Each structure stands twice: as C-alpha cells, then as structure tokens.
Image (cartoon, rainbow, N blue to C red; front, side, top):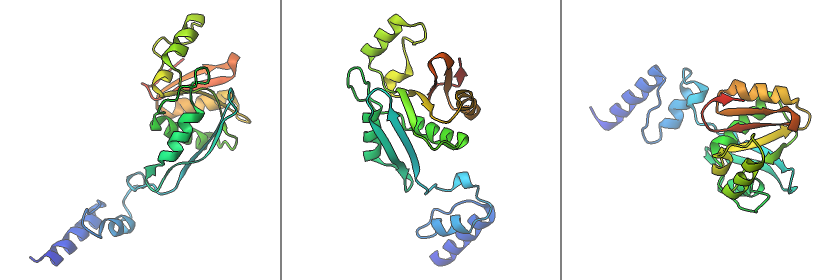
Length: 192
C-alpha cells in the first residue's frame, strides 16, 4: 500500500469513528467534516473576553484574554496588574483556570457589567494581617497563589451569582452576603 492510499484509509477511518486524524493537512478537514465530533472536542476559536474594575484602585480591564486557541500573554499581564494586591502593590500571576471560571460564570448569569474585584491577589503579608483581624480570612488563602477572587457584578443578584458559581462545580465558592460579594477559587469543590 502506498502513502497516498494509507492517508486516504486513515482519513476515512477517522471520519467513520469521529476521531481526528493527525496527518499533515488532514486534521482540520477531518474535524470539520466529522458530524459526530462533540463541540467540546473541537478547538475553540472564539475569543474569551472578560471585564473587571478593581474597587480599590479603579483599574480596569476589558478585552480578550484567550483567542485563537491560546491565552493572550499581554492580556494576562494586564489582568495580573488589575488584580494586584492593592495594599502593597505586589503583582502575581493569576491562574488562567480562574479566568476561565469567571468567563463561564459571566455567561451563566448573562452579565454585561464588569466584575467588581473586591480582592484578587493577596501577598502573604496582607493575608496574614487580614487573617489576624478576621475569622473569615484563611491563613493559607488561595488568594496568595493567584487562585481566588472576591467579586460582585452590578445588576446581578448576589444569590444568583453564588448559585451559578456553585452549579459549575469548579472550585470553592464562598458567600458573603453582609459584605456583598462572593468568593470563587480553583481549589477543591467546597462551599461556605
């Protein structure tokens, strides 16, 4: 069997099974032609956008953080800056999975207003000071790893935001009704 026939056979088998042939020039055609391929299996090309306003600094972000199948480095840097520790000015990398959670949550509640950031990254010193003054701040908070955010969205009821976050089963969700925000993180699934 020659190479051309082998390629045809592999492409046909991939179409029948719904798989994706990893052959030069054929992968995109096979994916596009395969009616059984689930949308989750196909590379997402639509840009993922977020918008934030930091309630302490007034800094904003409104742009795509993911497009063309990859995270956008300049956008991630800008988000890191907006979500910095507003008490110390320290900047830390924010977990892209947290951004993906926020993107999903935004769609679930059909939010058009930006996320209001109450707390994003917290330096260890800031977290220790907050922990010393409040039983609601964990001593080893995921905020210190760039894996947590405290938010609200103008025009979205806080209980609706919380319930949508809980429904994602994507990490921790805390509900702080008296302070008017919810916490989400990329840790294990839990609630408080």
